[in-house]
Image (tube, rainbow, N blue to C red; front, side, top):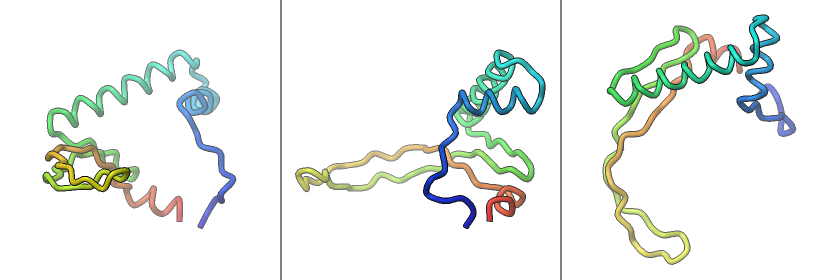
Length: 99
């Protein structure tokens, strides 16, 4: 497995810095593109559409059925309502890159 337990997570600010360095765009422009990207993916998912980035992956939604769960502190049974949740499925190129 690549990487290890000491890997630093990448946050939005770090991603903006890396993309600005890689593209020569300003950090302000990169941040605006990331914001627009996440907004567009979110809007598409809200409309029930999937977003495919060939080789990278697919953003889509999945229906989760209602079920019964337990409050971990009290053990009391609780009803968890049905909901739609976002999912990301990695594409072949991404899977191969992180093997």
